[in-house]
Image (cartoon, rainbow over all chains, first blue to last red; front, side, top):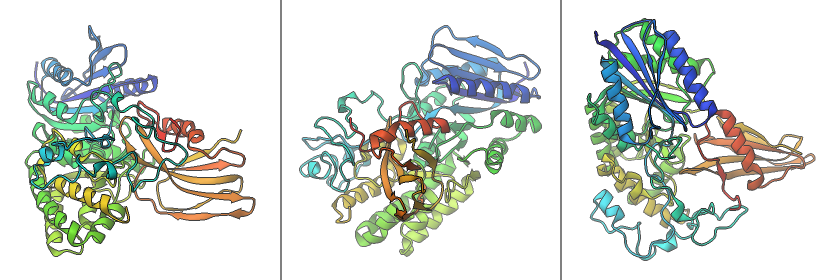
Length: 426
Length: 105
């Protein structure tokens, strides 16, 4: 068999009938649009009762196979096996892996545990800072992070009971992979972590893909894309609550120009979403960024910026606080902010910060291939970053196990949160 | 039964209570884990021709407006099912229903 130019691999979850209909509709649209033998499409669909694979080639009926056992989509090995099966059955020069489900960006975002009796190693271990930890345990933590932190009003119409969070859930009832977000698998209700996603791709026979598309909410974050930089050339994702991509139009674009390089195909994918946004048919965002070394360069530039910004916390708290709490453009995830907006606002009165920010902006400009955003999300430019306004959020867990934890941004967040907790206005 | 009217906020607005409503409020998503949690961020009221209004600056976060018709119940618990239904209708609801801060456990 002659290898095709592209394999489009769609790894999808359908947790209910409506989602199942959306995926099966996408399969039909892709089949109708696939008019070239320079591209093939493989879909692995996870429902509660079965896992199916759908093989789509030009001029042929869709071949559907039901796997002998229900596959857990949250297991990295499940994704690896799908990739390997697709590569064996439909060998291609290039692969675009598209993951379609719900998500919430970073893997482990949640609040601090309510009670911490003793000093924990958490933040020091995660951020490697030699400063004594202000957060994460020890005397005074309960005063700051008690049943309800001082800067947050008690529930408007309810009450918090001991041993429960403010929703009334027992803290020990948290699921094993609490906070992880790509999924959930319809059967196990577990999530594929960003780190797990990286491992799954790295362990496949191809070891990386040309395009990794994350059709899931809030995955266009610096931390997520940095984690995945070694396993893809181009990353496509959304900064906001994402809607399903127009898969039929994507395949039609590929069929119209069947041998694109990864960057051309990424731009075509963004263009299909942009067309729907322009037609008023959707209200989300999408961006395509170069991955690999470009992300390393961006992270290095941002590290220098974060180190400078951390110094401003004590030197100019009023400006820092205003930038983070008010001025920087938020996305519809309560913990993330648009990266370009952040560097435009944070440190705007400080020359060294502005120089460092300009370097970040230059690196980002060089890696941004395409971007589209609905008017409903003003001021988002293609990449978000973790930047919670709240003293609740467990910073140590948020970056635990990620490669981004070594970036100085973690230390900025830690110092910012500590200052926020002590701030009279908090 | 007065059913609250929910709509997506996508830009800054002046929150004014419609003539047929007792109150209008803004819900803003303030956190998520396996649930999405919303807080009541702004609430203005009306009694007959006497009405309050307030400006709301949209900052990009997930924000929903709720207009509560005359005679409706103004409480987080009463609004929660309507918010869940609204998010589901948008096709963006995750596996667990949303929570409004202040909903009794």
